Length: 84
Image (cartoon, rainbow, N blue to C red; front, side, top):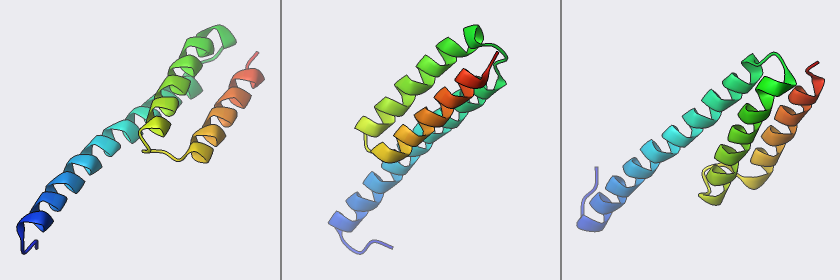
């Protein structure tokens, strides 16, 4: 447990950040599942765009590392290209 004011503040900050980051990661997972559920390129195009938007935003906020986001985007694009 925190023993002084700065430790208490740090704990408050880290809890808030953790919750915010969890929401962002959950949004990434949701958008990925929505993309994988699509059955044609026409359906997948807006889903892919939305996933890119969420990943880019998470990268800017340092929730997801840049290479991890790039890897997820590449895999998503590969999936869309495999659709008929």
